[in-house]
Amino acid sequence: MLASKIFTPTLRDVPAEAEIVSHQLLLRAGFMRKSTAGVYTILPMGHRVINKIIKIVEEEMNKADGQELYLPIIQPAELWLESGRWHVYGPELFKLKDRHNRDFCLGPTHEEIITDLVKKEVSSYKQLPLLLYQIQNKYRDERRPRFGLMRSREFIMKDLYSFDRDEEGLDISYQKMFDAYTNVFKRCGLKFRPVEADSGAIGGNRSHEFVVLAGSGEAEIVYCESCDYAANVERAEAVNAGINPDANPEKMSKVATPNIKTIQEISDFLQVSPEQCLKTLVYLADGKPVAVVVRGDREVNEIKLKNKLDCLELELARDDAVLELSGVPVGSLGPVGLKGIPVYLDEEASLVVNGVTGANEVDHHLINVNYPRDYQAQLIGDFRLVGAGDKCPVCQAELSSARGIEVGQVFKLGTKYSEAMDATFVDEHGQRQYMVMGCYGIGITRTMAAAVEQNYDENGIIWPLAIAPFQVAIVPVSNKDEAQMKAAFSIYRELLKRGIEVILDDRDERAGVKFADADLIGYPLRITVGKKTVKEGTVDIRVRRDGTEMTVPLEQVEQEVMTLIERGK
Ligand code: 9G3
Image (cartoon, rainbow, N blue to C red):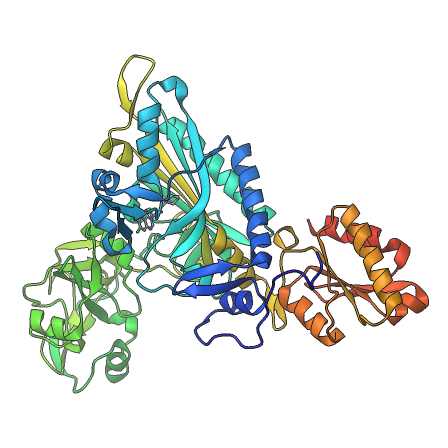
């Protein structure tokens, strides 16, 4: 490909709304453009990257016995009513009507459609297991589309669904997919970690996320260096120390705390550590209030809370709502004598001896508060976020934490959808059984963004070789110099012959501009053809990732490039 021909408009300035590096760089380097909020055009340069990711994904899915198909993007409401999810996802569904006023949605995911297909076409155990997948656009009307391809309203996903006779079959399909995902992200050249994850609203009982490690990522994970345990913090189980047997519960009393509201303020004012304080937050679960109590140094894990409450919507109550519900302003709230709101108590908080809490009275707190002597709870459980320094639930060593971007997730669904939609088969004993399902997704467009988020420097993107739009860029320093252009084209043809993906920057631009663009776009290798080439018969080959540069005689260029590419694989 010639750089003068490829449609890759670069930008000097990025729109202010591009908050993260991958969004900025993919716009600047001409990989994509925004069409409307949360909807992007993928330009040729981006398309090449996407295609490479797709090829790797298809190869690994096929190797794991997946069969590719296309499911419809337009889905009838009836199927979503059958599964019960039309109302669960409500506003996030892109809904439309046909000329007969029938309801449809644009597919946000395809559990319903595929369960309906398989239920109609599969009747015998002999036809199972079945692993079907597609790579296609998905549509979700996100409340807040942001971060470019990370949270867009239209995106490309690979989704595979497995249908098995029983749990043992599902275990095998799940493991196959787990291994295939590991291969995919390895082959893409990404640093990633599979972690235990919450299976969330989609139901089912076991799930892993594949997280591309990047400091800017939204996903927070904890992992153990002594054993294999790794989990998303939403899922990670808290391990709490027991009660300190030496601590003596003292007599509870009330103290005046003028204008003291936050945990930090109370801990400074009374000279107690935040661990000694109890933090009380009021949530609305499908509109009903619940008070959650965690230790002052902890955060509420809303996912765990939501799972326990089994509600559709969970939101923190606004300050005025809390005042109205409890008669107490937020800063003075506490579990002792709290009226009309059930208390969900985090186990660790229940172990605090002589704790400090709001007194449910303006400008007052209680000290020496002890559970269960001084207050009761509707439920004690694990409601807090786990973080670095917490104990590993498997081996008790100290956990470390890292951030990343979730690019894939695998779920054991069990019979949730097959029961809801009556997808059965007849087993070898002539018995009707529900199919046992799994579902497995990879965000293709998100993987491209995550690759950038993990691989860039101040000059631009640094593509991993396997998914780079081109492996090599040839940059002639001066277009006016015919000998240089001749040498550049000769190298270009030789590399093409060997199947190397190469772009020749034949644009009539200054060398500095071409170098800057090559760095911005992020080609793994750059070959500079200049005066030296003409005079001495050498070129410079530069490795984008570490900036190393070597001078190579013309007759060794192809061999050197091949070696570098082999090494980079
Ligand atoms: C919806 C809407 C948004 C959604 C879903 C449904 C997320 C939904 C979870 C999944 C799970 C798996 C297939 C491949 C693997 C992942 N957001 N999820 O089900 F209607 Cl609007 O999509 N799907």
